[in-house]
Length: 435
Image 1: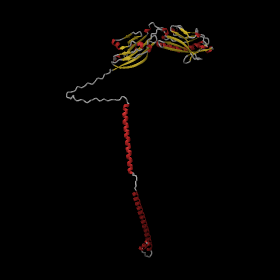
Image 2 (image 1 turned 135 degrees about the vertical axis):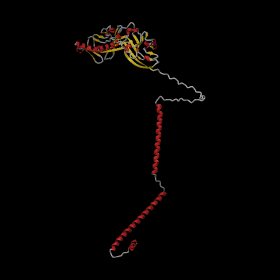
Image 3 (image 1 turned 60 degrees about the vertical axis):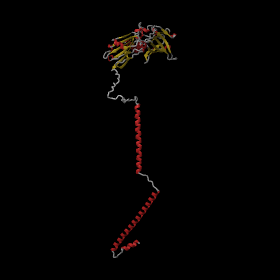
Image 4 (image 1 turned 60 degrees about the horizontal axis):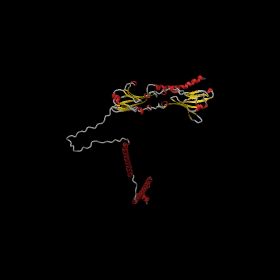
């Protein structure tokens, strides 16, 4: 049973130990971490400013050294008050302070915590009142370090229910009532080491320059600046005069490098290194500087001298035409809108004229009849006369047809009589018929 518990505890400690080992390795590394990169292009002969600002490198010179590093354990109870309670705190000098008299002699921290980096909390004779969420808070006011580790503590009366596991966010400890428990809080970063006797030598800023094709480890050192105010410049004298850093760099946190009279030979990669060995700060900012051709200043055109054959008394007309181009686009769109509106209005007028002319032409082909009384009477008389003439003609035609039929009948009778021996006078018979 104990072996299984040890295995579970070991598995819980693996991610915590791996985290602190990775942080320790990173902070202990001599190589700087690149936090920013910039591409800067400037014309030859000008001045350029490579800005490198960091608030973490501002020197405070706080004399209360033993109160800069603080550790405190807090307890958050889930019920019934849901309140946060301070259990114990400890300063870098080794002084501990227990806030609740009930915990005197029950809770304790190692006296070598700030040397060993082990800030685990030991609780003796665990009771039901000790249940809750514990947090180990590590603060370093000077280095602006704030870290927190949380552990959930539960109490049981059954030995079979004792266990330790990770719920995805925090470690959970289920311990037996009346036993002793150790809540782990380990941080062995070099930031928790003792203070150095020479604090002013711990903060360093230096600028390097890599010419094209040169590796980082072969870069040329330009300037070194210490928190004590000491500044060292490297290279030829003309190079030292054209590259400067402000003397108030550590007071303002601005370590920018100013390069005057920029030349093509100044091209390359510049890097600003910030080192604080005590706080474990190793940062680097890189600047790729490119030099363009110098800016050519426009010169005034040469004025021709007046010739002798010309009359100098005559005033010459101005030959300069000033063309003002608008900077904004709507100045060009407004006249274009006026032109389009004029064309549309002209097309509309032409369309109306065409429609009116077509309507008049259709009226000429199909005139509307307008009659007077006289014309009506004359036309009625003419129509009656025409009607009478037609009737008379019809009657004449009918009489002629009757006569023709009668002649045909007489001819038939004559033919018939000719067959008989009898003579008939045709004229007389016609006169009778007419009568």
